[in-house]
Amino acid sequence: MQCPKCHAPMHTYNRNGVQIEQCSGCRGIFLDYGELESLTRLEAQWSQPAPPPPAAPQAYPAAPPAPAWGAPHHGGHGHYGHNRHKSFGRMLFSS
Amino acid sequence: MPVDVLPALAAGAREAAHPRGGRGEPCGHPDTVLAARDDGTVVRHGDTVAKAHAPGTDPTGLALRLATAAALPTVLLAPLRPAPAVLHGRQVTFWPYGTPVDPEIPEDAPWEAAGALLARLHRAPAPAGLPPMRGPAKAARAVARLRAAGPHPAAPPVLRAWAALPAWARGDRPMPVTSTLCHGDFHLGQLVRHPAGTGPWRLIDVDDLGVGVPGWDLARPAAWYACGLLPPDEWTRFLTAYREEGGPAVPAAGDPWPALDVPARALTVQTAALAVAKSVAADRPLDEVQRAVVDACHRMGTTPPELVQDFTK
Image 1: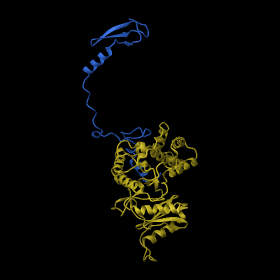
Image 2 (image 1 turned 135 degrees about the vertical axis):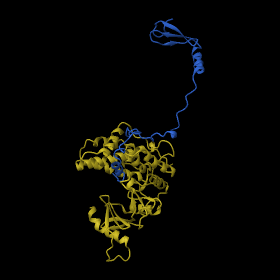
Image 3 (image 1 turned 90 degrees about the vertical axis):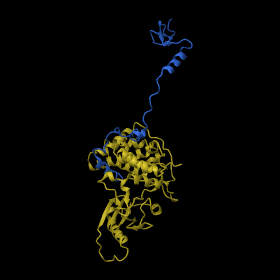
Image 4 (image 1 turned 30 degrees about the vertical axis):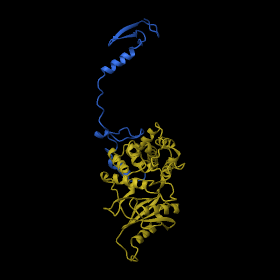
């Protein structure tokens, strides 16, 4: 058959017993009536169990939230790492 | 001028420290000048501290602020006298001496006490007639100082970040929250232990106290954290203590930044504005800490501020 979109010839493939037509030009796929449902059913049957959810945040604390305009080195070492006293001293004043 | 009031202020502190029997007998206490700035001169004599408030301080507002401190002695340091005195045309208040935070030992900073005290302050009923807290007005003064300082390559991003703030945060409009009691100028220098050395921590400096947006009081530590100047664990200690004490400025759990974004931006701009103004005046380049706050103002240009959210209702 010919692709209804670009009119290039379509080739037939077999995927898990479902006949699929794919266009050799635009790579579009044509499914007959019921074939999409068949594929969906097969996918559900074959899909693996979901991976375990990631560990709770409390178990491995991340840096607390910060605004988008914040310093890019959150989670790493900010200025406080090597300039602790200077930045701390500023926190004692109204500046 | 601050210097003119000093001798009278020292005499006032001496008199307050030795109300009886001190006449003519010199005591061994030295007069120590704790601060001599345009916005206030502070002299210590023994256990007593006398503060001359800025020229032009509104007497009614100061009296209300002083009365607020006297009524909340477990949160704010209580004044020695219930009403301000007038010395050489300046409003003067008297306080017991308390031990400040040691600038040499960052590890000992009382972040938990700070968070808990602010939460208690924000939960306390505000006395009728108390004026608005003066945080936004203070930020506006800092920006005015930057504009007056003359050109500097770091000034434009700071002024752009300022212009992007809502009018209330620039002191141009009333604040959206007008019922919560706020300190108005919180930083670690606003904490003392009283009795000195061993007593519990208390908040000092009622000059900017008033009703307003409570997030403003959390905004300086928030700004320092955002700028990479306050380690995450210290910010967490402060915020957690505030939340555990039922502080209303942020939701009890989850991301606090929707409530802190605007005040923290304003405090970052204020800090950057003063840093650049001082850098121009002293003809000195910005240091690393000052560059960090200017850089944050730069980045603010690419992210619009969040709408303020009122968690106190």
